[in-house]
Length: 343
Image (cartoon, rainbow, N blue to C red; front, side, top):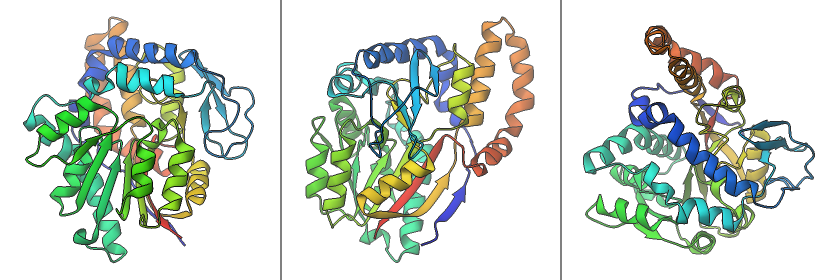
């Protein structure tokens, strides 16, 4: 089966939703460093998160953590395991949700429509190409957070519910709608939800990289024949990773914090095969150029060149979409959206 590919999307007003990445670089970096402290206390990782191959020495170090390239599937693994203790510390005890919740309903809708509506529309259009109307689609969204994607899917006429480990995010998301469609679950409860759902589409937007028990989740998807499609986005080993190595004083949003491993084309393919699925659709659009822009702006400002940073910004920002398109088409960009179809 040939994979139907789509490349790039405009940055639009993305930076208006990421102001803390610029304005509070040091605070965000402190947050990521705190999570790194927790990760570095966990056991050393000896096998690949995706294929189980034996790992060797780190390919590089970034923000005190070594990253090891799998010799079999290329998956980028941090040198330490993401454990239940790590997940509890960074997702539950630390209330990670406070970094991503919108302040009120108007900003909630704005974030939903700017970031998540295009993803829901992409899913709708791809499934329509496969002969499924919106009314045919029933979604279980795992790691739903505040429910932005679930809300966007429901706006398009799809049936959608979500689960998340953060009680505060679930409470906030349900307060944004007349009908609560999010459920709070324990750290390992998603496996049972996946195993027992009658949804025909499982969605995981920026979630698979956070699952401590990824193997069991993969097995649960494979075992549940009701799930015909999986729609996910994952962070990729990419130019953003390289930029984070070069700019040690910039907030490492891509290979820091809760991202303890990054995917590659081969590791996504391997994961699909383990599920008993094949890759049907891909949409590649990253934030590599936005990350480079952010690092340069922060560095200039730290070097007391705020006026020059504005000079640079006026000339660089108009080029960003075109530059990112080049990066996306190189197949080494920071994010991949894909739809898997059961074989």
